[in-house]
Length: 362
Image: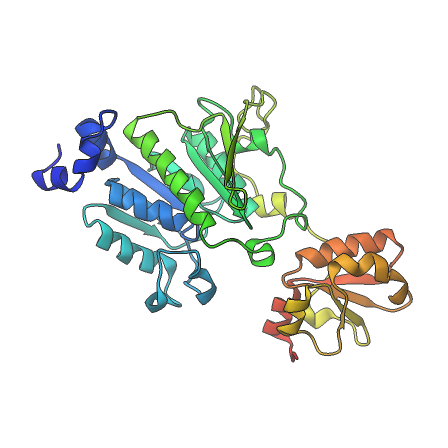
């Protein structure tokens, strides 16, 4: 039962004919786990706490960084370098002291996922990497729990609810991850600061609908949002009977090595310490990235101009390609290898890895 104070606090919910006191009581008795307390997790966590979800679990092991603040609105300047778990818990308890906050300062893994997820009614995926995304999906399938999915990149976002007991799972839509170097990270490609707010709020809405048992969740539908066009589209999704996890005859029946599944070993990678003496370093980043700092002695050839510059790159010399984090350089390497550059390799971790281990820079 709701207390008089709770009835006052949630009065705008109670007046909703589809929601009412019954829906609010369901939220009070419910639990939600948010995996990732970053851009997507910030609005999800704040709105679930404000809405009166009884217990909220948070899985994250990162610290608040200055570059987070343009989109991760859960944090402020006073939180810099604090564990996100700690800063998030303080903020959520300030939003709603009635909500129980359960932090898990750890990386979700095949060893702990089933145990952590098992105790929650709904799981919200706020991650930004494919290994954890597939891990969350598979654990939710095995546990029979709904997985509220969201993803963002540059100016576009996606959202859906994957519930293998009623519709498709994430693997029905994406049976296999993209090649490791095909999709740049948000650090590489950028993200509009308000975009995680839009998609994260949609995720929070879907979680509240599921927990309060109202409306029609996004099961079997993928919502696509384009901020530049301010357009929203929906795609219908069907359960894949041949899905390896939730299909008629599943072949994946327990959690696997998701890092290995999504990031198979890459050949021709070099760490900064392994760069051979005398090698020609080629920086394939954009001009503004080069201007912000680069490896001394490197040659600047932006990725888009590589095809036109091939004749100027020696084929009889060790060539090491690098970008900011290693994704773009791996793509350039594949292209150059196809053009016969047998001595070309790329820098694992890119310029960031070089800064951390070698230097100096200009």
